[in-house]
Image 1 (spheres, helix red, strand yellow):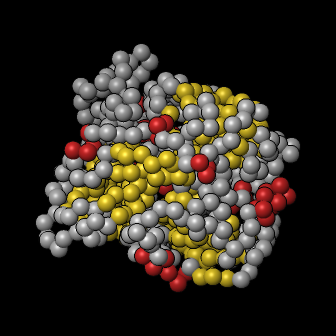
Image 2 (image 1 turned 180 degrees about the horizontal axis):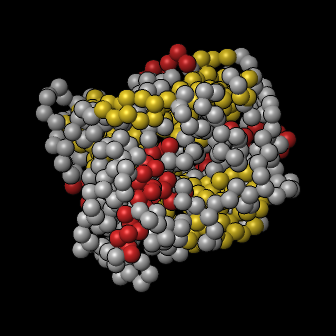
Amino acid sequence: MQKPSRRTLLRAPFAAAGAGLLASCSDSDSPSRSGPQQTAGTTAFVPQGPKGFVNPSGPEVLATERKRGSGPVRMVTFTAAESMLDLGGRSVHSWAYNESVPGPLVRVTAGDVLSLTLKNRLKDKTTLHAHGVRLRCDMDGVPDLTQASIAPGTDFIYRFVAAHPGTYLFHSHVGMQPDRALYAPFVVDDPKETLAYDQEWIVVLDDWVDDIDGSSPEHVLDQLKPGGSMAMNMHMGMGPGPGSPGPHRSASVPPASPKSKKGLGPDRVLRDSHSSLLHGEGGNVAYPHYLINGRLRTDPSVFRCRPGDRIRIRLINAGSETAFRVALGGHPMTVTHTDGYPVQHKTTDALLIGMAERYDVLVTAKDGVFPLVALAEGKPGKGLAILRTDKGKNLPSPDVRPAELDRVIVPARQLLPADSVRLDERKPDRELRIRITGSMQRYDWGFDHKAYDVRQRHAVRAGERVRLTLVNATDMWHPMHLHGHTFAVGGLNSERARKDTTVVLPHRKLVLDFDADNPGLWMLHCHNQYHSESGMMTVLGYQK
């Protein structure tokens, strides 16, 4: 079997950035101006905080970027703007990149320089984060930490070497914007790819609430906080609180009134959530819809291939508050990568994918029509897409539930790294221990009982092997993400998959080892957008 050609790869379900993805001969650490703003590197951004730490555009950052080399420049333009979006039979008014959901696929080859111009045509400031990409710090897109936010009506160029192949995700890093359509898949192809497959299917999962019966992500966050519908129910003894008897405590909770706060839309607080896989609540937001590739399950996207085709599926969870249990009816899946990094191949029937996690799998298509189902873990609802090899008109029911969803589910902790990406055996030079804290009652999520402050620093030094122990002292699960780095999950030795986002179960701890090889200031946060916006973020800073 031959490896797919570039032409075959670009037959993915999204158009690549098209005319915007062009080669250039320029190469510089100090790119040119874009509109009223400049790219980082021309005017260094200095955030608030203690002295003695590497700045996002400091010489250490530029030196590390030069070591990554400089290949052809690929130019892309995203326009962030208010848009009318068709979710497959239902139109919504939201915010999106290039008026599409998901945003356009961006595809480059490892070693290329990506030059992405973000045009902000929103009424609010914004930024763009390349999730999972080990890039230069001043291109990381964290407002007030690695750059100033992009003001409405201005442009900003994100320019960096895409050194590591893998499946990644672009999304806004401002407020609740990621819970709209401000996200897009990003694929960095490996010029030395060893996998053999015939076709590729990029599958982007999402939970959707914006512009449904007057709801918005900001309104939902307001409902979750003290004074909102969740807090009022707790005060009345109807929801979680100190000494509550566990995840089944809310089974008898009556529904709240249709309007929990004037002008906030219907009550979106979920009170009867439970997941045995997540050891407790699945989540706290009752999303009205779940999408696969921007479409509702009543009008799903269809991927066509031939019987016997070997398909590489790149699974991306772009959701803000939902883990998905994913299976393809009638097919086992072979896991080949997680978070962009290769693993020793492992066969499974289903996968549990936390927010911002990515998995690559291989399947061999059988003859017929098959449902790809993304079950909202611990919540009612699901997303649906279709794989088909025939020309018939019949599709599976929107309520289909493949038996594979309830069979073997291989967790990330059981995946072993491929030899090419295994961390070398080494004792940690530095150990950090951070407690994950907060409760639904107070909605005071944070680390070590502190809410995020841009001036926070957990110190590391370049060249160190760092052991980070996360202790989850809460009743909720949290998908934890470290910017600019990948870590070995487990920490006991190097025999753990390389990831950048991983689930920490309630009242458990997780040990992560990583090499401090990318100087700068890097966010560590929960990728539940409602938790992070409530304070569950902090900063790892490289000392000079």
